[in-house]
Length: 361
Image 1 (tube, helix red, strand yellow):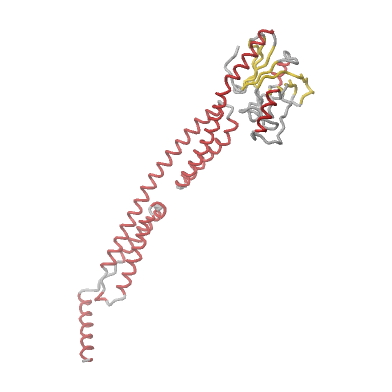
Image 2 (image 1 turned 90 degrees about the vertical axis):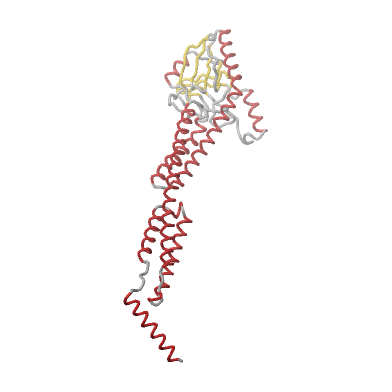
């Protein structure tokens, strides 16, 4: 019996050898494997790991399974090898990798178009806010936010050139967030201005009326226009450009806040050349009674620190004409304009400072 089995096995081997000799052993699907690998490499270069990772991983797994199936068949006797399953798996892997590459390309194209559109929108908003800032005292407060938005815009361009569209989009989002903060600053400033405009207009009108009635000189400073006006007998006599405190958009609350005060004042001292740090100067009576009351209320309400001081020594002085707001709260004219103004001013001359007004003689 044992001899019979051995003989039968030998016969089978001989039959297999004859089949292999005349028919040939099946070839492993090495071409399909190579094509699948090449397509997977193409998908990787198309950023499929980022934009179509599930398809990419599926193709990668199919290649591994197909490869293992091919190796399993290679371990069998030639007559019994069957590579159909391996070939099917590798063909499917090729298709999955191709789909992954296509999906990544489409996603990338859509993302690129979206990011470019958002960049264009940010650019337009930057231009609009630049124009708005240039026409308001809120410029100083909002400048930092505008600069951040501009930097985000420039950085997004560099990232897009590198193909980092998602990172570019995150920068654009940061830029828009900065502009939202800027918008709040401008809105708060505009609301505050709208509430107080009638007060400033009343101050200006009272100053003009008193000048007309008394036949005297007066100075009106419009912070928004960066202008100082010399009034005589209720009529405009001279106009000067002026620089303000480095924080010009608000009422002065305490020493060191960089704000130019708003209110009705008068000249308390006339300082000639050498008597002032800034060429010549007209000292005004800041803080007046209203300023002191505001200071006390701000302290009690916790708006300013209890250690704050109210400050003083607010002047109209020279060394201005720098086309920027740089003083600690004073009004600065060019030396030439200061010489002209000093010809008409004496102790007691009214000085009215407003953020904005449309009431002019």
